Length: 245
Image 1 (tube, rainbow, N blue to C red):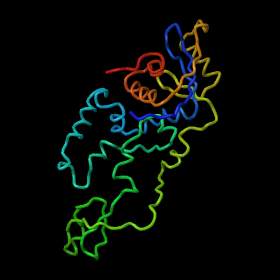
Image 2 (spheres, rainbow, N blue to C red; image 1 turned 30 degrees about the vertical axis):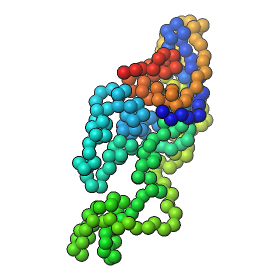
Image 3 (cartoon, one colour; image 1 turned 90 degrees about the vertical axis):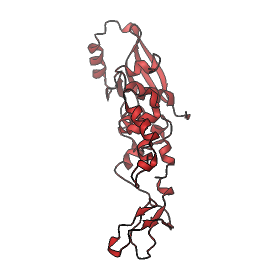
Image 4 (cartoon, rainbow, N blue to C red; image 1 turned 135 degrees about the vertical axis):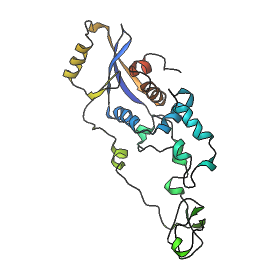
């Protein structure tokens, strides 16, 4: 597994009697990482956790696509679209907490695209898939588009609705956030802390311990895994052994 030097600090409030994380104080970067888990394509989640660690049948479905011969796919489709889907987030802090996605080295990167047309000089159609049938049937064409074109100049910088997310993350960097053991997240305040202690019917605050832990790639993977299997995620990752299947 790839390594990363990215580390984020998280302060935990631990009930030492029950060996349970009550909540965590987290920065914007930590919250952005947790929210980003919702953006991960299913194919990426399976690759990150490996097929054997997936709950249910999704691992088997992924393996079926892996083993399916490319000849059974549509001419304009490639298995990597399913096996190596791209995440919409590319922030260095967020992505540094998960292994790199090989999809960024796939033939679907803009810089490595190739363009093809048919053999007719008057053809106005172009494709990125060599061998595609030319749709210009009005000129009795319909031949395979396998004549490669040369791209001149610089590739444009593509921006979409996720561009601001890539640069700025999801949440504002003005407050500290509270993360519950089941990953319920809210802005932290004195009132919310007192309300939470009342919810847990806390009688002896002397059993509480504050502990600062580091969130890196290993913890990021374990958080993702535990979030799919448990409602005591922070306790599982930082106080107990990671869930194994």
